[in-house]
Image 1 (cartoon, rainbow, N blue to C red):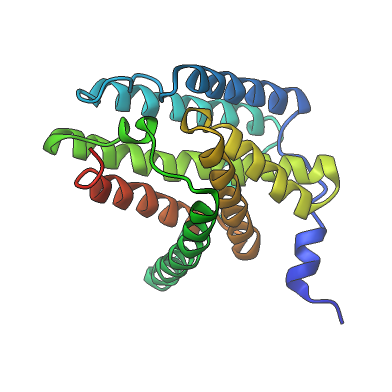
Image 2 (image 1 turned 180 degrees about the vertical axis):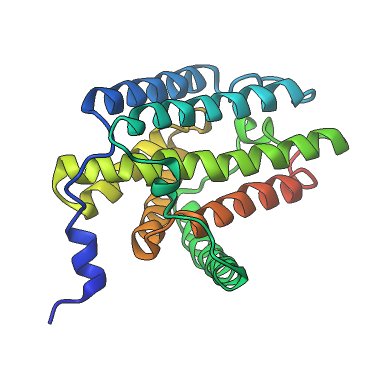
Length: 238
């Protein structure tokens, strides 16, 4: 008898969630943003070592604009953003379960990423240092940015693109891998090594979403990863 988990990974939902032109435009937007970051070696508005508040607001606004564009595309196919997420919590028990899954995922995935980073000899560059907050106000904005990334990027990449690529490739596994690659490419400002590491991370997030049929654990893990990294790294990376 076939393993249900393997079967679900190779049999995608055959229904697209948005028109092909919409996906193409979204990819162009992501590539344009990444290309600008790769050229300047920084995220939008974060070129200086201090005074990141405006840059954080710019990134937060741009991520929500991309989600708004996703909503614009899927609504014509009678798909809600909540459908991309995988529904809402029905009580405290599923919340606790998703928190536990997110914690376990963070532990396992960070071991993989640490080994990969050591193999590639990847060390934090200036672009990563420029993301880190300074002072209480920037820390608060940074945490809002981390929350925004956890929600918006999971919707864009795992909720939307993973499904679309799975339909186009007629393979859920291919959809998972392709969205991970795009996720890595979208972080052009971090340089080739970290783009590759982020692509692997995106695939791990995609696997989590495929397994749980929900973005909620991934959103929690994504927020915790970015938030904890920024708070801890600001004390060690100068």
